[in-house]
Amino acid sequence: MRKMGFSFLALILAFALCTGASATVIELFDEDEAFVENLAQEDTPTTIENESGDAYSGDLSLNVTAPQDVTNGQRYNATIVGWVYNIVENPAAADEARWIVFAWKKMGGTGIMIQFPDNGNWGAVTDPFVDPPAPGTGRYIAGENMTGWTGIQVSEAVPAQWTVVKRDLFADFTGFVLTGVAMTPFDNTGLYDFIYLAASEQEADSIISTVTAVKPDSKLVTTWSEVKVR
Image 1 (cartoon, rainbow, N blue to C red):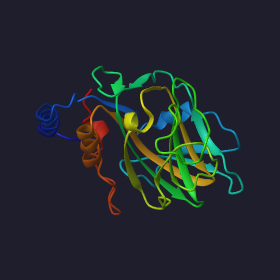
Image 2 (cartoon, rainbow, N blue to C red):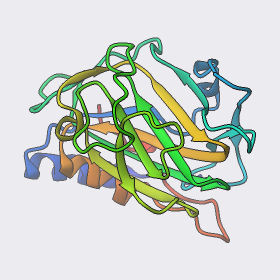
Image 3 (tube, rainbow, N blue to C red):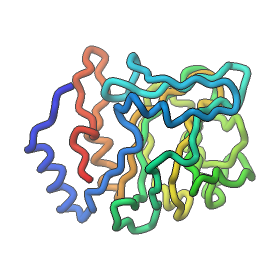
Image 4 (cartoon, helix red, strand yellow):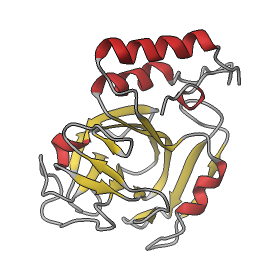
């Protein structure tokens, strides 16, 4: 992968200063082969592995695969070591954020989900789709909600191709403490790529514009993880 020069890093800093953004970006997952070790928990037999043959950007994504005849296939961890991120209305500290961006893709089946617990708790289950849902139910779903666990449906369509999602966590779920993640393809295979927290929408947009999609004929792309500012 090619590296970015100082001039582009300076441009990112200038953009943050001009827009009043805090230039605080928190990487939850991107190009980290060891990250799979964090998601050891499962409810039904579900595999997780690094996927080097299909990624939105960079060299790898996470492949989470469950049998076709289940509805709750997932790999998760409610309290990942080092993850104590406060989702607040006006982020000011290094451990505070408001926006999230990630990419996903579903291969087979009718839905896909990602979940973010509040201080280790997954939240109440009421209706499959509530917008906004009850506080503490930090779930995003595309397509059918096969478990019925309460969350926000970001798209009626299943992302059969790589799709980038940008959401305002505070507006969606009010303030909470993000301590883990569940990657929930329900059944079949779900692919998950970069996951970042940002203090502002401008920073979230900067990540999206910087994380360039892999071209079919080349893996030479630049990811935000190479230019991120902390």
